[in-house]
Length: 509
Image (tube, rainbow, N blue to C red; front, side):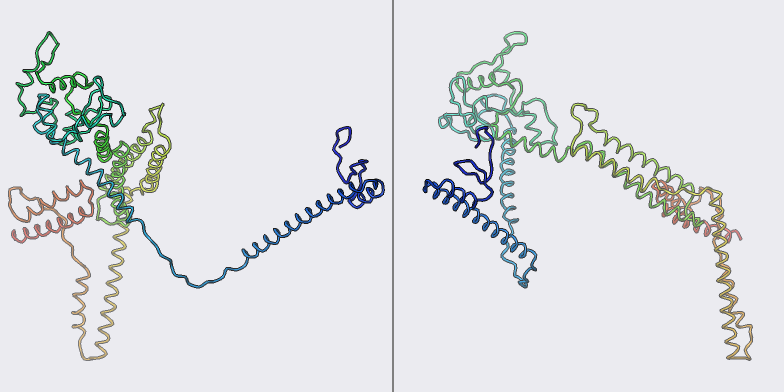
């Protein structure tokens, strides 16, 4: 390093600080100018040799690495070796094992919950009102753990003393302190065991005697009551438990936290199954409207095609009524989808976010797609004038087709007659003409009369009864928008009316 502190780079002589261009020049300079001390010259040569070896070795490593990379790239680019068909190795499905473990745990959970419900039902059955009798009843249903066997609370690990007394769970018999005690009211217990039955706000069983309770309550003043103490120590414990309980104003059961968690989990599961969110109700209603609209659209499309063909199968007024119904259903679908999108938006502090918001938006989008693809593209019905023109055009087409078919029949008949004349030239033409006459008469056709006779209401003719039934069926089918059935029933009614009219004319003649 120079005196001014600048860094000097290159092949520099360590004695005279001369900058040389190559290591050979530096060695030669050192031999010529500084050849006084041979040890320095030797050490310098050794230093240059080590540096040279290290540099050469590093170059060899780099070359070997480059060769390896080239070989690896060649292997990757080389085509894969075809080993032929290989057999599949051993496979093991863990689904059965997983189901066994899951079912065992679910069965254990459900079994424990069912045991608690059975014990709770037995406790509620003929429950005494007297604290001493009630305690005996609870011990007979669920055996309690001996107080002497438990020194510490299993939940909080605190020791029991005069201020921290021992309590028992009424469903499993475990010992706990007052702070770890959970309470279950008798009304909630009855709802858990028999949710369909009528709940009673009073905890007194109808079979329990009332004299024990009234005999143990003494009036000390207006609005003040106190419990009379019996000579036994158990009665004193019962009185203290009623005084120390936070829920002493309400009849209840003492439970441990584990039993209470099991019962609450069951209640949450039932609420999840039966209590559906409001969006579910809205969506089910919207889907019902969509299915009804789809059914009506199929019927409307069939009627529209019939009207465009000029057919008289359906009534134009029925189609107009159906169109109005479809429009109302579309409005209902639009309004319900808007309500679903607006669910929760009134709550400024906690608006719908994430998946809930995306669900609302997707329901609204699906409703809009349904309206655009099905209801907004509904074809318009022809007016009465246009419908009459279509009927006239259809009648003309039918007449032209009938005339064409009649002409074809006449030509076929003439061809057959010519063939017969060729075979039998002496035969007359009257037979062939007579054979063709029924064909011509048949082509004219004959339809029943559409005139409806004014029938007296006092007659009990079966035909009249059938016609009245058909009219009621037509009215019912039209109310349910089943216009195919309406068309069929109307044709049957016309046939009955024609038959009755013909029969009446015959009887009058």
